[in-house]
Image (cartoon, rainbow over all chains, first blue to last red; front, side, top):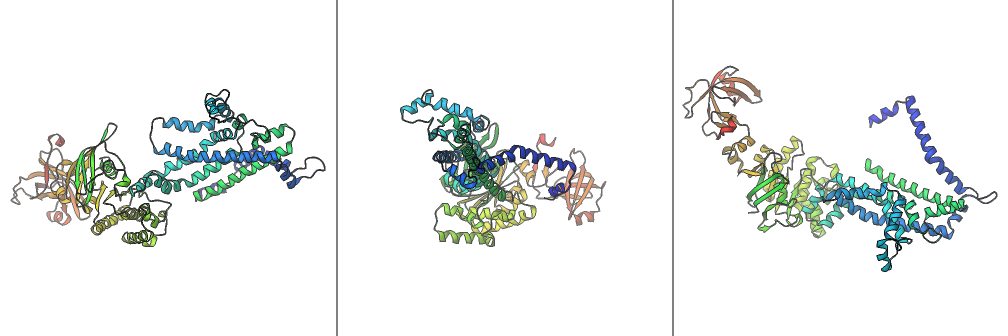
Amino acid sequence: MADTSTIRGRKSPVTYVMRFSVIAYLSVLVVWPLYEVTARTFAPIERGAEGGFSAFLERLQDPSVTYAFQLTATCAFWAVLINTVFGVGISLLLVRYQFPGRRVLSVLVDLPMSVSPVVVGLALVLAYSSGQGWFGGVLESAGIFIIGTTPGLIMATAFVSLPLVVREIVPVLEEIGIDAELAASSLGANGWQTFRRITLPSIKWAVVYGVVLSLARSLGEFGAVKIVSPGAEFRGETATILIQNRYTNYEEPTAYAAAFVLVLASVLALVVVSLIRKPDHQ
Amino acid sequence: MSIEVSGINKSYGDFVALEDINVSLPTGQLTALLGPSGGGKSTLLRIIAGLDTADSGSVEIEGVNATRLPPQKRNVGFVFQHYAVFKHMTVAKNVAFGLEIRKRPKAEVKAKVAELLELVHLSQFAHRLPSQLSGGQRQRLALARALAVEPSVLLLDEPFGALDAQVRKELRDWLRRLHDEVHVTTVFVTHDQEEAMEVADEIVVINNGRIEQIGTPDQLYDEPANDFVMGFLGDVTRLGNVRLRPHDIELALSPAVAAGTAPAFAGVIARTLRVGFEVRLTVDVDGQGETTQVVLSRTHARALDLEVGTKVWLRPATGASSVPVLGIAAG
């Protein structure tokens, strides 16, 4: 790494200008707003009232807040689980098999990245709601309701975070190639044994990375969930919807507290990811 | 017969990779599939292993029709050019893989792994990861791993192709000795004629998806079936109406010397080049469009006092192997 240190050693005015602009940009966009949320979280609600950590905890212990976080956790858990299983499957399909429509599938997987989550929510409502959705009618007669219930929220969350796992695994699968897998099968391993003993250990870190990313994404999902969910207290109100509702209802301190928890979760996810990434690059 | 390949055809789109391949390989023999890159030899090996499927034809291994069997049911060991070791497993675990898949008792696996690591001289590296091994060591590991399942045939796809010349030569000798010890029917693919001649009992020359000739190294060298085989196995030059090896030409300073049966061709030395112990001469033969290459030992050349411009007479040495020049190819 001699090259990097030489570059680093040369400090011209341009270096300082660039450094300053990057720091300023990040401060204005990220650091300052997040600092405000944190500060408000721990600030006293009104003059003379108690502030700090205990007040923060108290706000979080409100049953409707607990419900919201539980719902978010449930949705995130199932969405991540579903996406991990399907993500690995789709990745294998995309990399290891040639079939007509492979490119179309690849584009479809990326679609949730580019389509606005609100549109996703709307599309799910159109497809599955018992009133107007053609598929919803069938499900309704079978006694299954998607829209407005937890499965609907999970679907919306899963839809939005689908590409994250796939996009992590695909490049790793492409890089490791098929030689080791062929060797395993020539040594007598069947498809499942080859996958479990050879393929999975090779893509392990990519899977973990994808899971952490989609977990972070799922916890913070708002747009799609907002459309699909009834969005009332104790009725489909996830943490993000709770923040929106409380904020507009002048219960800002609760909104700040919930927001702070979400920020904390994302930071934690990023720390985990950077810890995972490090040994990879050594 | 251990491997019986009959009527194999394989095309990729318009490209014909293999055309009506018939070959039988006896048990315990070390066979080389030799040919230029893209000639179809690797494809044939992969079809035998079941890693590729033929469009038509059949493969029989140890009397069992294996044409439709998946690779894991064929009981073949396959060694890849780029090792294909399992990077996340230790050396010992790599070797144990096939046995663990077959659910052999732990003690048996351990003993077998120790025995094989001994055989490939990797015992002291048993607990290392493949990334800590050199290329040659990785390839020996891949070999031990393939041998662990006691395959009825061992298939090697350009096994030494990714190694440097020195290690390549070492492993080549080592493979020959290993085969003499283990006696498993072995087929290896190579584009290096020297490698094939040194190691193999029998060589199958494949070019453009067809078998050009099958025979022992001596047969191929001495009685090449055609121009291609002759040219692929060593240097070839033209003298009169035949192609032959440059070292199979006798050179004299007068037409009368040596009462040879073949008529001598007169010519003039156009160029001389000394490489180590040999001297390579380029001779302009009278009435022949193409120049003729002649190789002499250094001592011989010095005794004759040869230099550019010397008039010489050439004739094929007695017992020299040669093939007639094809009308069109001669130009």
